[in-house]
Image (cartoon, rainbow, N blue to C red; front, top):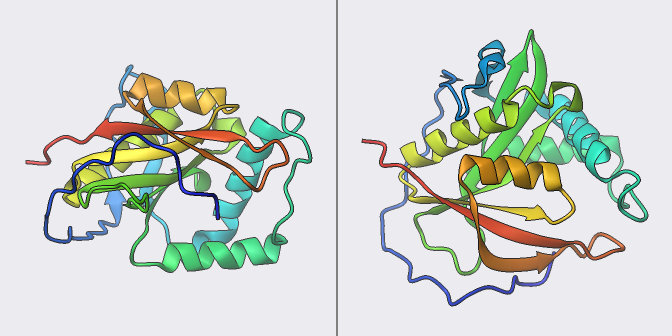
Length: 212
């Protein structure tokens, strides 16, 4: 695992009861910020273990499109496809993780996952977005913003007050999407030890709306 992130002074946790974990079958896509009209083409729904192979395919394609040719020794060593799919099945089957898929004519075009934050300085009412990936053919259609909104709506409905994420500096496209949506860096950094270049990731933070 990566070393503990360097961060500003820890925030004081706000004692709150454990948030509920609802899983509505379908999430109606509300209009994302910026009025991106093509988002109406996507259908949002919850993932299950049966989606592991499709999630892995989107994950690998998106990462390759961003890092291949830009990062030394890419792709990094790790499990083969069967191992990755099994890991996705375990991830999608965890009661601690909520994964929302975006489908386009029956094809998974992207996904986002959310859960309670695992950062050591996180307050109990802080959620995190460990993954958000869009299949490259669906880039520039507003899907990243749509998935961000779905993550915000899901975590706010679960009782969280803030949403955080980590993104490496070289992923300029993702950083632009998150900044446009309203996420702001909070000063915390960590190093991806799985990469030869020891890529630096920064944490971004977004206050969540009151679901009421």
